[in-house]
Image 1 (cartoon, rainbow, N blue to C red):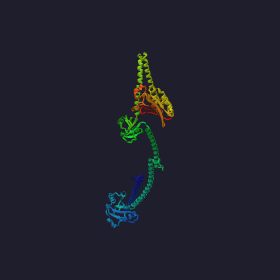
Image 2 (image 1 turned 90 degrees about the horizontal axis):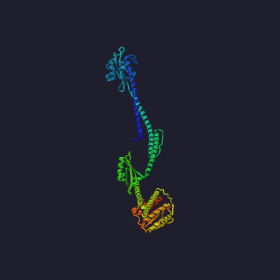
Image 3 (image 1 turned 90 degrees about the vertical axis):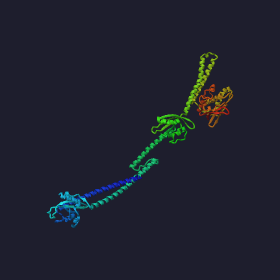
Image 4 (image 1 turned 135 degrees about the horizontal axis):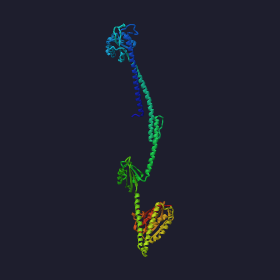
Length: 594
């Protein structure tokens, strides 16, 4: 395959050959035609002279009369031409190039078209200058003939009419044309050679700059260089400048696209929602990090079928619906190690017939909704019981028991107890609400917890003695976790009260603490019946009771452990439930060391 240089050279070669050949043909034909026309005119002029000489019997070299052959010889010598004289029958009676003895063998005039034409005019009495025949070329000579008429009183032989023919050799013209052709061919070849040399050099220089431009443009495209050198001010230089401007525009466009891509990847990568983009064949084109975490897969291969990632029937039904409707949503369960409830919203891409699916993990939302429903139900139940008791006792008092000195005070005390219980529930709810919302002020500072533990144990000794229980604390005075004093006291109070309530009479409750690395643990232990494992996951929920009937009989609200959990977490701590050996349970609170 020819390169740029070869194509330029071949084009120049063809162009030069075409121009040279055309020039040679035009000059040769033009000059040849001119010379032949000039020769034909000269033949006609000589023929006119010969015609006049014969008709008038005058000759510049003849002092007297000449016979026909001598006349032809004399005219041929004077005109530097081949002169032949024919009589009116077409017989040769004189020729400048043949002897008289050879005239008989020269043939008839009918064999010569120009002579035959002149004889016809002679017989038609149409002769004179206008009766000359058109010059005819034959045997490398140009011939023309004309009729003549001569009177018999000029001292010549007594014939009156005939034809004279003049022939001039074309050898000189042919020689000139041959030399001209040779010279033109030589000049054309020399010109073509010079032109080819110049075009070759021009194509070399042009192709060298062009090849350099192509090579540098390739380097520019692959990032090997940033700009092209502008070596000249011609069209190639302008092209290099155009490439540079294109490269600058391309760099700006690529930089803008890179910024947009980085911005898109940053947004997509930090989205909490899982995003999956599918093509028209439901194959994955893109998945963000949240999608990988939600589906519990390490990576997604481009072109991987989405059914390999999401194996939920609801998701399989979602895709046909979104292509039919444009948008659709469904709730489904995904996950391998743990099932998660996911709300998937999908939209169809009009341009590619693909689908974008946004999946939101609503597991916690659904759990909180269930907790809310349970909370509303529990609050309603907890409030309904004391309110019902108060309403019933009030109605009894209004029906006449108020005036009964024996029954009236009992109903009034029942109303008082229900009101106190209702107040405790409301108070605990308000405390829990303030803790969750962060409205309860906390002053975190290193605090000797021995004093707090002593106050709590001392304040609850009467309750413990009433149930014949041993209540004690063993907390070192050098333990100072980072906590809020009031919050810690409330935590210990709730935990110790719970232990006293649920530990059988004669049991034992104690408080201990110890430092473990950068944390301090506080244990509230009892040797009661303990808590079954099935209750432990929900023990810190609001209103959750292991034994609801017994808790209500003891006046509990079901919010104490939930308050403990939220107070511990507000102080950057945790609380957990452990088994005590051999019986009982341990509520362990972890706080940061001060």
